[in-house]
Length: 189
Ligand SMILES: C[S@@+](CC[C@H](N)C(=O)[O-])C[C@H]1O[C@@H](n2cnc3c(N)ncnc32)[C@H](O)[C@@H]1O
Image (cartoon, rainbow, N blue to C red; front, side):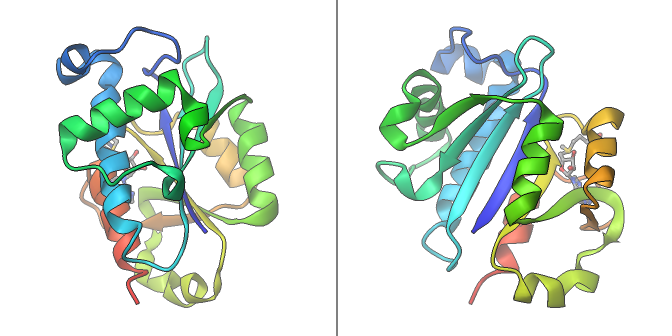
């Protein structure tokens, strides 16, 4: 299982979202829709099951949304399709076996670390190549990254506390969706 945890401080669970408002940049929901689209394109190409966890870190939220990719009803055809798909998941999560859970970031990461190796993605980490042997061995991995913003210092402290591996794809800052592609690429058979 490959899980991507993407932290967003701007997305709200119950705000009204439409294609038009999202394309206009509302809450930068588009960043997550692009990540969903990217992951959906990998789900038939690699052997691991894929899971997306969107963590809503806004002070009035502190909620995780778990989306198992294999339960999505159909393959997404493009960016608008993925925006529409993600809006539907937010309004009716049960239709795709997705689930909102009220949980603090620290507790979420503690829980995940009990069954998965945690990798924190950040340009300052160790080169990914240094971890290739470990990635070959692991069967349950969880990659944590920021969305349009990086993680906060407090969230970073949580990851250091649970001894997450700190992984870099290089000095360049990449978009969250590009980071997902680069990681999934490592798992091509
Ligand atoms: C668009 S970036 C976040 C904002 C960006 N740091 C900026 O200043 O605009 C999305 C996330 O992808 C991950 N990321 C970006 N570049 C990376 C790299 N070179 N290596 C590892 N992770 C990276 C980080 O977790 C980052 O928070």
